[in-house]
Length: 345
Ligand SMILES: Cc1cc2nc3c(=O)[nH]c(=O)nc-3n(C[C@H](O)[C@H](O)[C@H](O)COP(=O)(O)OP(=O)(O)OC[C@H]3O[C@@H](n4cnc5c(N)ncnc54)[C@H](O)[C@@H]3O)c2cc1C
Image (cartoon, rainbow, N blue to C red; front, side, top):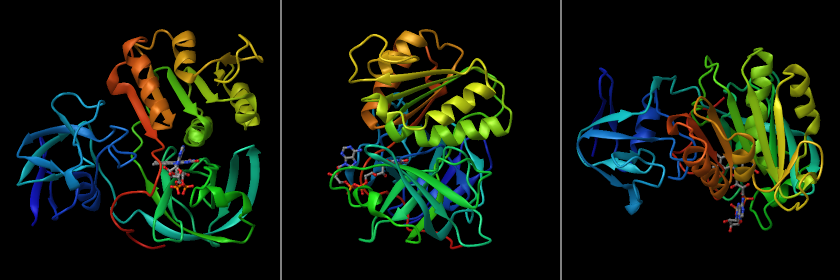
C-alpha cells in the first residue's frame, strides 16, 4: 500500500510503496537525504518523524546509538500511514543519475600485504559521474553485490580506482588478487550522499582505518584540484607501518598544503615513535592526542563500524566535536542492501 511522505517546512511530498524504506522512497523520487551504509549502522540518515508512525522493515531496530532520542533511521523504517518527516538535510537529485557499467580491469597492484589497488576502465567514451566520497556496488556473481568507495577523484572519470582489503574467505575480496587485466566487472554508481560542506573553511580532520583511506583519497585529491584552503589533518590507522600503503599521495598533499598534518596510527607498534609522523596506538587514541580541541572542526571518519564508533565517541565526548559535524562512512560487511539496480549506461 502506498503512503505519502511530506518534508516538513517544504512543499515536497513523495509516495512510498509497500515494503520500501523512507530513504529508498525519497531517493527513487529524486529527493536525496543524507545516507551511507543503508544498513542502520552509520547513522547518517537519522531524522525526525513529525507526524505519523513508522515501523522497522523486517522488525529491524529503527534507532541506534547515533540517534538523538527523537530520531529514527530512515534507511530501516517504513511508514505505517502518511508521514511528515524532518531529515537533517535534503536536496533534489536526478533519480536517473545512477548508471550501470561493464568495467574492465586495467591494473591490479598489491599495495600492502592484504590490500589491492584495483584500477578499472569504463568502455570507450563512457564517463562515471560521482562526488568524492561516494561508492559503487559491484556484482559478485551469486546475485549479490558489494560496496566499494571510489578512491579516484571525480575529474578522473574514465576509470574507477578501488582499494580492496582481502577478507579471508570473502566472496569478492578474496578473489581480487587473482583478477587479471581485461576481466570484466558489472557495477553501478553512484551511491551515498556526502555530507561534507564544500564551502566550509573550518578545520577538517579525516580519520581512516585501513582501506577507509579510499574515499579520503578521493576527497583530498578533489580538494587539491579545487585548491581548497583549510586546515587539514589526516589520521590513518593500520596495524603496522606496511598497512599505510600510499605514502606518495600523502607526500603530494604535504607539498600542496604545507601545514597539512599527517599521523599514521599504528596499533600493533609499541614504541612511542616507531617512525617519523607515526603514533603507536589506535586512531581514536591518536585523535585525542593530536586533536584534543575539535569545537570548530568538521570530522570525517571512515572504516569498520567499530573504528568509526570509537572515533565518534572520543571526538564528541572528549574533543568537543559538534555531533552535527561528524560524518561517518562505515564499511559494513556483507552484501549491499537497497533497491534493485536502476538505470543503465
Ligand atoms: C559503503 C561501503 C563502502 C565500502 N567500501 C570499501 C572499500 O573501499 N574497500 C574495502 O576493502 N571494503 C569496502 N567495503 C566493504 C565491502 O563492501 C565488503 O563488505 C568486503 O570487501 C567483504 O566482502 P567479501 O565479499 O569479500 O566478503 P563476504 O563474502 O561478504 O564475507 C565473508 C565473511 O567475512 C566476514 N567479513 C566481511 N568483511 C569483513 C571485515 N572487514 N572484517 C572481518 N570480517 C569480515 C563476513 O561477515 C563473512 O563472514 C565497503 C562497505 C560499505 C557498506
